[in-house]
Image (cartoon, rainbow, N blue to C red):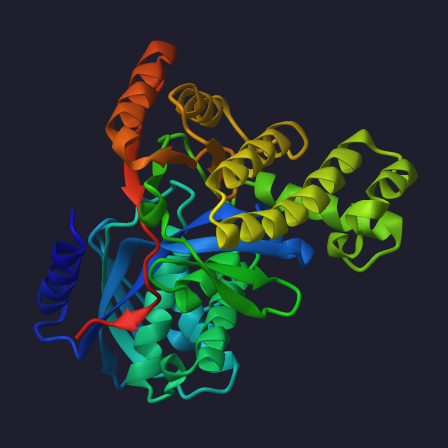
Length: 391
């Protein structure tokens, strides 16, 4: 499904749901994290790009402080009074919508009731942040419909991103960091976003692989990916435990030069592995920025490979499908490949020559078939733009 058809379907569904034309259509992108996995909730650095694939919401104000929302992907409409929104209520996908209104209301903004319809071409459950795309598209709509004007400045966009993080953590009860929402609000075409998750400062880094004859191949492995199943939260808890044992505020406080000493203080082998991943991953983000700014794609590829090995062995968040996808891409000549996103399924990325995209995708599909996995979906992407009003 193309973005144009998703946008049109959202508006058409709104007419069917309400009998009225929406006041507007807004959208926000999914994201791919180039490198810097599970560093955001450790106050670290990460380097995402926004995807061309987007989630679209058609919306109009209501005068009764109620939310009514329906998704083309989920079917039945959900309706709730804004006063009744709380942790776990409403449940499921609608929590990401209701949570945004709740979070902005909690910040003191005058948030109206809304009718909302949703359509998307961001793959769901693929580790490409379909949830943050939904949240940020809704936040963009609320900003405009409530006259908040937060889309007009970078600080305003950052404020919307933070509200979306609160919504996801509190109402949807998903213990994520803040990378996804900031990427959806702040990223730009053909640029990556270097994000400091301690200060929430950011800067743009050139990411135009085509200028170097390269491409970023994303493979949705179709392996189940769910951030509320406890595994993601357990990694976050382990990092907190390690920081407490080391007497630091967060694992960001451990410099690479002090890593060996820090590991020697930890009594748990599991915590040693977790700390080693976080500290070295933050350093790989710095190296990746330097590689991109110098146009050194081979160096970037090596960092991708090191990152995947760290996530597989130290953070233990990979899975057979992700390992096969990355190994196959390398065997086809990719400069580097790694899993992306929260892990335990989802997607991988590979740095490949633009001319090799079809052959690499075909090789990954064949490798999956030989392992008895579900067929993957691979596609090349460029860095896309942030949340915006479409009409």
